[in-house]
Image 1 (cartoon, rainbow, N blue to C red):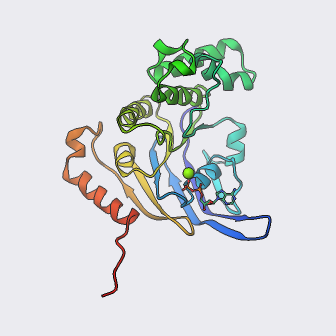
Image 2: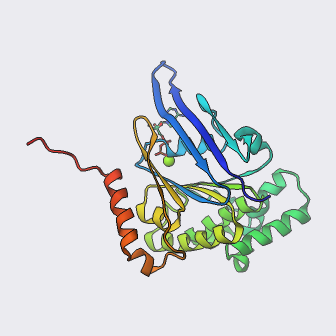
Length: 261
Ligand SMILES: Nc1ncnc2c1ncn2[C@@H]1O[C@H](COP(=O)(O)OP(=O)(O)O)[C@@H](O)[C@H]1O
Ligand SMILES: [Mg+2]
């Protein structure tokens, strides 16, 4: 499967607790994601990023509004296995090797062992882990384990990849390396990627477009197209354009509190 576009129109999400309290978590949220693009949702903790990602991924039904993936409703896209999901924790089965973990979704889908194995080998190659295929999860570093979970999602050949703070649990140096890997994986596969983070530098390193989210209720407060050259090496990151974007994003994420005179 190639890559698909995503459109979300007027998505609203209100959670109602058992006692009847209503929390309006997302309001009036619309997005238009071009096939093959790398789009980041950047916002503070609690602003509704994970909720939005679950709605885009067909895991949660919005209170109102519509999500289309490649022109079909998100639920249908899930049924067609168009959606690959990568979460903060890699969630690998500890008694299975990296390769067996990557084959897992194929096994659940009852695909043939042969197609599962060839998809797994290709996906492991894409994330640069062919050499570690037979290791058990405890023999992998945190970054490698997360690359296995990316390979597991890719092995199903989804048309979009949704990633919820996938490197949030890793140390800063590993995280930089993982971002380089991910930029390469994106270029090699041409997948549409929606990536959630609260890191400005990570968003600027990876994205074609950054949607900045604000809280209470969760909504998009700004959208920036990032036209920095790739790869985004030190020269790009040290440049003026990068600095200008970073300053704008910092202002939006950490608005200075106005003091009364
Ligand atoms: N199932 C749920 N029921 C009630 N409230 C929820 C539920 N899921 C998330 N929330 C609330 O929605 C808000 C946004 O959560 P979340 O989407 O996880 O934010 P983020 O990923 O940006 O940190 C939070 O206030 C959270 O408590
Ligand atoms: Mg979250």
